[in-house]
Image (tube, rainbow, N blue to C red; front, side, top):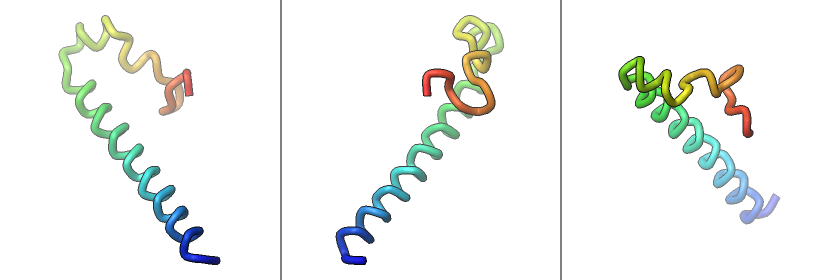
Length: 55
């Protein structure tokens, strides 16, 4: 394994962590909105099993 492969693996891992943190932050924000607004935008109905349907 050369240095480039290790760097790429670390970058991939950091990217996954960043994505997870952003998803958690979004969920907290959305859950903090009033219930009527969440209903109007379809939160959390547009999510199935914790993943977005378009994913």
